[in-house]
Image (cartoon, rainbow, N blue to C red):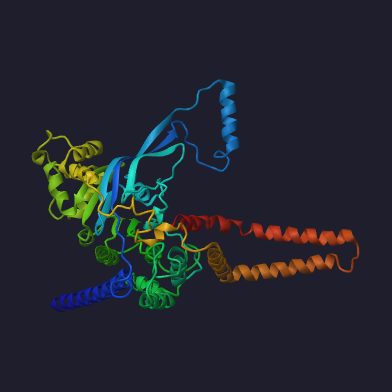
Length: 518
């Protein structure tokens, strides 16, 4: 037993040394401290959410499953005519609260852990609100504001704040017939323009820095280092795959999604349940690399996890607890337990801090509530809304309000027009030109199309057989009508053959929308 324990300790030390070495190399490359960093200032962002709410209006009696028919304009007109004819009133709408009066502050160089109920807690909505991806319409609306160094998404300042934020979705949507390296290279070409540096307007590199950048661009250095840090270097030439096409495992595919969105030096990274499909050790390694990377480059990392291990939770600086779209706590992770102890929530022996926080947001803490330790009530557990009200009346919320009133340390309001914002990617919506984007997408489509061997073989046989059959029918004919008949049947066969590929194009829409939003 002692020998096995010694071997485990030795392997753990070796793994930690390797992780520290890889992390330091990643920091060296990404921060450009030794080569490019001394020529280009890094940009930090501070985020302030002030009384932000997001609600959805929904018909009370509308329980139909959404289809193409009942969501069309003609169906809505048909229902309206029917109500007018029968003199019925329009159905009442109820408001579903997704986020309610959220006040938060995110400081550069810190990592934030978001925990909440998986069913309607509001984690995904919070991250999408920060990333500017919340759907806005007549029935989906938001209130309040989210400011990034003094600017909001609605400001016409010439800065595209969406490019300053990388968002990692909870689902893994990739082209299955592209390899891991090709997927990351495509993201690097589109999101970073194929270059390891992005300069603000009217800025230039000196010859020394330009030579370093050209070297990095030629070697695809960032893609290489990110894949190594995520443990995907050995699977770089393996297909990403999906449920139908064999490729990397589910956990590796999750890491591909993370690597894909880390191809730029975006000052803010939002990750929605990045631990899905990953074991505790891999999640810890990734979060630790992101922690060191963020502290060195003054980046903001906002990550939501499902039941993180105690070691992983300890890596975060602050924690945000959400329930029913309301904030139950926001502050330093070391202050969570004393705060809830004062409210009567006592963790049993053997329960770590991560499980303690998850117990509160998922079950209202009914099993761990102790009336004897509650200094504010008489033996009655709090509801989620009451816990949110308690937080608004606490010193932690007052600290957030004071931060809202504090002047910006790095205001972009006056710097937007002068081009002094260090993150040059914020000045263009797209990093590549239209011809370059057309070339990248066309090459990607031809690459994935050429790798579908079965599809190519079947279509080749089909076209040859159809060509022979049509040619045999109209063989040795000189009538114009017959020639037009050949053209008609040819076009008909092409149309029917194209219809077979329609389902795959529909399934690829999620990949297109992900790339478009990124």
